[in-house]
Length: 125
Figure 1 (cartoon, rainbow, N blue to C red):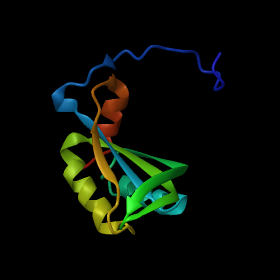
Figure 2 (tube, rainbow, N blue to C red):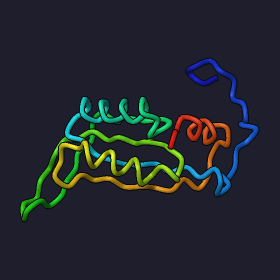
Figure 3 (cartoon, rainbow, N blue to C red):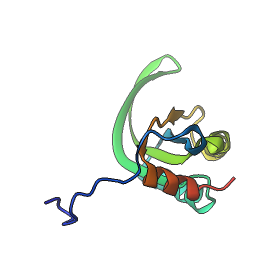
Figure 4 (tube, helix red, strand yellow):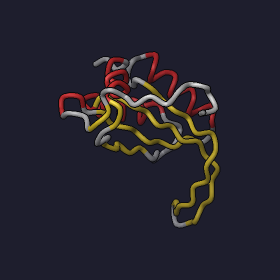
């Protein structure tokens, strides 16, 4: 039995999302958990994203202005309808503390239809 004591139940709508129900994930890094959480909360409250996850700790290695850097960061993963991706990226860039933030839009090729619909319902254009 899983730790949450819920029985395993197959999702009745699992499968590949139709183009009309397309969902994307936006991956963005932030200097710390609080910055990522604040950005994510704002995105959900403004219905830019249906759901946001914040992963509090990861380490990035990159070259910045000719110097190899190693930095502890947090990851924000926003899930939203594909048609809102441009708006979400613009929002992140306008409010991000980094000069050149990592912001990637990743297509979702499928998943639980019920979950994907729930994500889309939480997103407003």
